[in-house]
Amino acid sequence: MTTTLLAGALLLAQMLLGIAMGCAVFRMLRGPRAQDRVVGLDTLYVNGMLMLLIFGIRTGSTLYFEAALVIALLGFVGTAALAKFLMRGEVIE
Amino acid sequence: MMPLENVPAWAAVPAAILVLAGASLALIGSVGLLRLRSFYERVHAPTLGTSMGMACVLLASMIVFSALQVRPVLHELLIAVFMLVTTPVTLMLLARASLYRDRAEGNDEVPQVAASQKEAEVVEERAESGMR
Amino acid sequence: MRRLLPYPLLWVALLLLWVLLNESLSPGTILLGIVLAFVGCWCLALLKPARARVRRPAVALRLLGMVLADIYRSSIAVALIILSPKRKDRRSGFLSIPLELRDPYGLAVLACILTAAPGTAWVEFDSAKGTLLLHILDLVDEATWVDTVKNRYERPLMEIFQ
Image 1 (cartoon, each protein chain N blue to C red):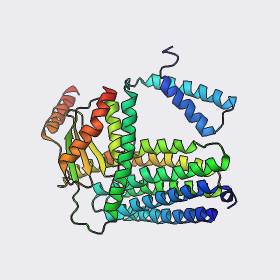
Image 2 (cartoon, rainbow over the protein chains, first blue to last red; image 1 turned 120 degrees about the vertical axis):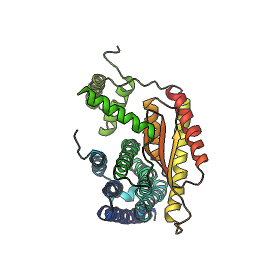
Image 3 (cartoon, chains in turn purple, cyan, green; image 1 turned 135 degrees about the horizontal axis):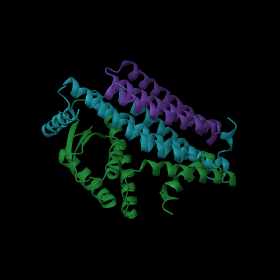
Image 4 (cartoon, one colour; image 1 turned 45 degrees about the vertical axis):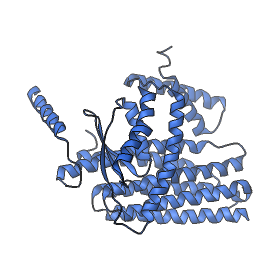
């Protein structure tokens, strides 16, 4: 009983996160200005990271966890570089 | 789904609730990204998913893995600390970049540079050109 | 001693990070973690960052608890704002606050707190005059927000870092 409850909750959570990723992609493609697109990208990778964590809970393997950590690291560096680019027009000064 | 069957009931129920809460918060944050009107309002929306939403999902993951492996798994704390430190940095950088761009284009809805700061910059520029 | 181990807290944090990443307490992991922690500390010593003095751990712990409670409360508030169908009667805007906190580490922590809590976003800090520019999603009463930032966050941070 509780197993089906947990499995159902995980499935529902993944669907919710999928919709959330869709919203972020929409803002990324639509966003009137460049900074809106970058915020969309930022939200997209955070949602993707949460999705991977839930995959990890479902399968019980820690491999997904490592992938989530890598996404968090690279997403941070990418967003910071893009913000820097918007501010100055170049990444490396 | 073999491993899920081994999760005891005391862990499954709170984990299910936490996972659903986290995913809904992330979804609300992303919907906010669509619904709010200006860029500065939209900057607030992702923090919903990155602070509370992430905390809920990570707690659920910790509960499930502790129940499965008997010993507590603190692995997830790493992601939590990392996200807590980095999200403010990225959002702050983005807000500053956007403010800079809006000021450069002379948009009215953002506060302009204060007068004394402008003077200071001019003085600085003069000093720099004098050095050259 | 200072030359060999310039930052004891960072050393412990790096070792803990390595052990957590590997999820094992075998001698090999711990040995490699110790070596990496030493290398990390020496690298930071080469960069010569300004020394931070953290005092009053009790105040810091209370601040942490307060911030977690605030994040919880403002998450719900912002979620309600996003989901509410009415759009007109909410006002958001910029708010500039004069700060007395000058320590760079204290300012960094304040920036993290304000941005991590949904509903407030740190936009700009003018270090010459010490004024902070915030963007607030639900700007009902400016005086309350100024009071919140100054009394709730800035005062304990000044106690901790100055």
